[in-house]
Length: 327
Image 1: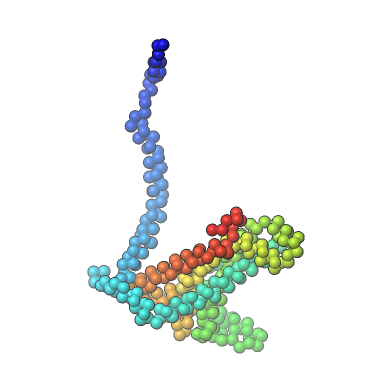
Image 2 (image 1 turned 90 degrees about the vertical axis):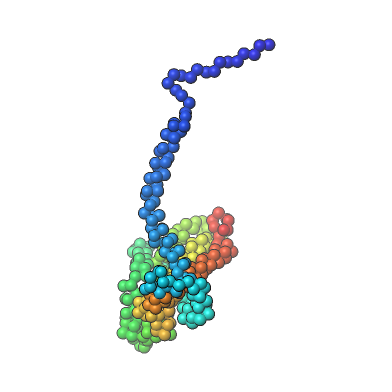
């Protein structure tokens, strides 16, 4: 039996198999898109390198030196771990600043979140002027850590301020709140708690996502308002609570502006408002111990990272997502 082989199909005239040049031509537009992308990203990349990455690496190097911010880099002396050793063993102001900062964060952050959640629950209703109230409650957060707001707050709580004038109406004798070491830190806490607008807005967004059917089912089962809050609102809102907790904890440890304005940059009265970041500023820019301040900054960075890791590690025990999977 003869086997015949079909002749190869004729190639139309004018066509040719794609060669290397053709393949390079197809890659041209992709390369041009990549180049355009990098061109548009270049301002951010330059900012990342010039404002963040390079200064961080320089700060890490300076943390092992005795640099004083006035000397030339050629005269910088390498001291190894001496700055860290002094920080942990021979600087009482360091541990005092740690205690003040931890106290501030442990008190101000939970109260701020509680105030934000409480107001969000009140404003999660339809009534006349609710938009105006939401804007007014959010307004203090727009000012953020501004110097002007801190000055106004200090003037409100000094001996002749508006707060003492209000107390005098009820026959209560006020105190020099910002100048009394027993109350100065509490004054800063009150300012931080008052700026609950940002987490309040996030809580409002979370409350809007909770299905109404869950409350209706709980009501049919005889659950009162408090029971519905515990069994429905808190579990469904736990991812939002976790998000706000992480952000506000980091912000709480980074507090600086109000403490600086209240104490005129000294941490007074009697070091009662000596926050960690303020102590770092004093060491670096007042006492010109830039190497020591750099070491403080890196310890602070590691501490914040560890706190964040702890929050994420414990969050899986109480944060519940709508898909039924805890992360």
